Image (cartoon, rainbow, N blue to C red; front, side, top):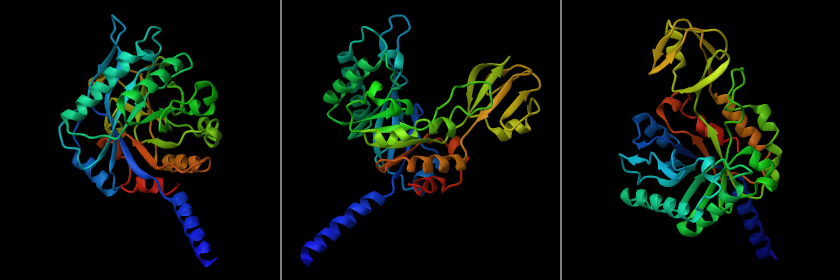
Length: 334
């Protein structure tokens, strides 16, 4: 009896520990050249990061023929042996919308290019991620592609999942992958109003309850980037990345006119972009408080604990906006 009790207690403790195990910190790397800056290396070291999700290439359409083509494959300028690498292939949804898409050919070419990049850089990956915001119209092609890619690659497969695909999974379906990563950002419409299109608690709340019913294991991707919405005559004309708010405040060509808005006082070029007098810049960013709020809201709606929290993306410009231990603070919420 005592022996059975001890065995039962041990099993209970193991299960309890498994439930309480904190997720690891991982990062997306989304530049076309892989080379870490000293600041980026420091963040990886401080947070004991052992896994990187590296964008290998995009797949878009050749303008004339509408044939799928790889776009801007990554080039490695330093060794990645210290990390577990997960190649990420971003597929534009318009590719999957092609009515006569040769899915087998696309899957073969995609697998081959991933293998070539791995071989050239002596990377032995165990998992590949497919990033595609598929729609109801592209669903059939996308699901078939996933099936074919999985058989050809002989690797574990991960897929990015959006909030609407969680809530309406019976319609959007679930790809045949080993796990998913919920992209917990880009929630709203990019618009001239004051709402933040990267993150909105109100929008997220409409979808969160669906997490408890979603059958696929999910890890979470959280945003650590910002951009400026460039507005002219109440119309969005572009997104401007890596605009330093501190520099804008010091620039005589710009005037801060609200919490998130800057107005162009006189026409000028900045970072190669032309700004016309009276144009507006709406700054959209994610604060440390936002990140903790996201983590707490996700934790309150989980069916199972995530194994990883992946921050998008590893870039010196982004991470300089946060204190060093923010990433550990976020995972402590789970």
